[in-house]
Image 1 (cartoon, rainbow, N blue to C red):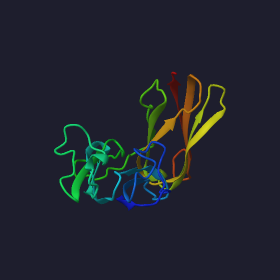
Image 2: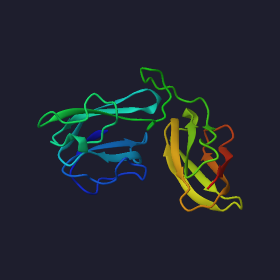
Image 3: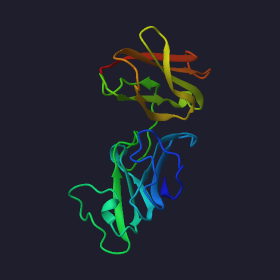
Length: 214
């Protein structure tokens, strides 16, 4: 979703384009999980004056497009990229279009028709080896929909490092970003666990290895 916020405490994520308001109302962009109770990505974007996000669209490969207008006379303060049609404001208020790449991993065709995964899967993280962060993708089948999902990271000695997911999930494909923080180089493991009477085995547990290289 997109809109605008003049507050200094709008919730943002650690990988946000900007975690702070740059002056006046700024455009905000937020991506929530399928349950609507957790942020996947959230950011401010704007210049020194008033910026409004008015519309949003989901493209292929998880790209998100937003458009709106900015009232900044020095429009160059609204973030633009090289080679765009116009980097400067031509008057009091100008339109803008912004693209955010790879924010959502969705399974579907070009018309965004969702295709639910047939089985639970845990993919190999990418990149691997990694530094400082990596992406982990997993899928929840309809049989496991609404069940409690746990995704945790462990060190080589089996000690829990962090919990990435710890909530009920709808059927679908998800990605989560693991930031290594102050962890040292070495081998780590990430494990997904789902417990449900609706599964043939009642329990689904899978573990994969990843390598952190400083």
